[in-house]
Length: 311
Ligand SMILES: *[C@@H]1O[C@H](CO)[C@@H](O)[C@H](O)[C@H]1NC(C)=O
Ligand SMILES: *[C@@H]1O[C@H](CO)[C@@H](O)[C@H](O)[C@H]1NC(C)=O
Ligand SMILES: *[C@@H]1O[C@H](CO)[C@@H](O)[C@H](O)[C@H]1NC(C)=O
Image (cartoon, rainbow, N blue to C red; front, side, top):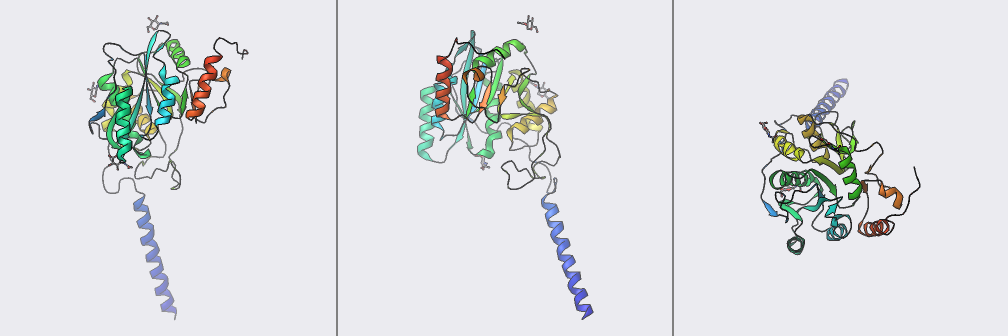
């Protein structure tokens, strides 16, 4: 009787131990060898925009991530903040970053849209959320290869309202030419280890306990030279599906620090309720769909020249 119970307990302990070992190995950072490193020269460009940067160097290139299906968002941007081609006498260019769709009619519509507007940068990778790092690096590669003359580059998303005028004004005021990186600064972030989170990152993907300083992926801005520097160093950085953290890792390796663009907050990754006076003094606001985009734009255009109360 006693020995049967002992045997049962012994076997339970062995089973428990095996389970513990199994789960700890699943979570082990270097189990099974090397971390997966970013592959720099993967794939050729399927679509390239009409932009002769050598002839006509832009002051600011706005790279907007969007998916093949989001044509209304692109349309709204093209008819609002994305239509700016000259601000304070400086050239500005808005381009869209896309992956591919398996749906044939969507893929054809994108090719047609690209022929019409000549503002699409596309490579052959599946356009899904977890390929955002590939998409961002495609944009950085494009600047490095085709537009290193750009003084500044912004990477943003298609549900963002961008005040291109104010951004240009602040960049001119800062007067920086190299190793400059700004946005909504995240200096002390930790990897989320809860599996249910959208931003879950396992210890296998990212073994360290702290993220490097990075800027919210909703909108960040850098001097043109940073594109080539990041592109150059990216191949030695462990791949991470969170593109903003990945870029942060590249910057850390390059020893490029993050800087505030202005003493007041101008980047709003959490959104901001609209008023014309408020939006005149911001750079980027999240959660602005196509309809709001048009409304906000019209309100700002029609209120031009009106006074705002002093702060
Ligand atoms: C990202 O794109 C590549 C290339 O098309 C594809 O093999 C991979 O499955 C995609 N990633 C995800 C998470 O779907
Ligand atoms: C910007 O900086 C350069 C050198 O760094 C300087 O020559 C120039 O005068 C500055 N311009 C303004 C407007 O401050
Ligand atoms: C790229 O990296 C190599 C070696 O790491 C270095 O020699 C080269 O100067 C870098 N180029 C740029 C544009 O940063």
